[in-house]
Image (tube, rainbow, N blue to C red; front, side):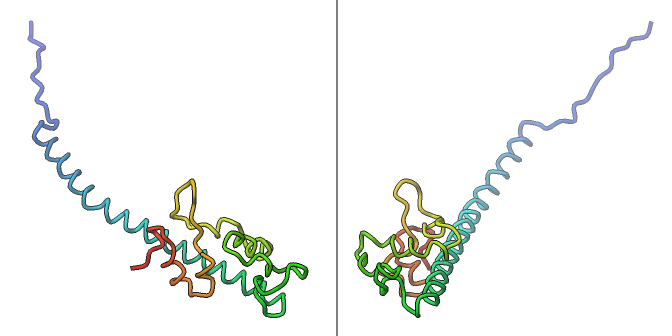
Length: 145
């Protein structure tokens, strides 16, 4: 009778080859992850500036509908927020512009974490340019270089 035993040669990975591949992948991940984090931070910053632009546009539209006056210069009796011009009632300026704002989400910095999210636009920065207003925000994604 013939012997049916066959000798198989293994063509798989050796332990050394597998360790080399894992090490190369770890090095690539270590190089790429910081670059991805920077890209994510830049995207959040762009989103913040876009939100500020939309806030400014809402102010312009509201101003155009109310004789070229901002909500904080128009009395409450005529639809403004002049009597609420204190730090605690800043949200009321945006509340009267609810028809001009596409969504209330643009009032919050996308980089802020819950709870206690930080508004992208502070009352002090309303008259500044979007990049200056973003510089006044204490969140890292809105920080300008």
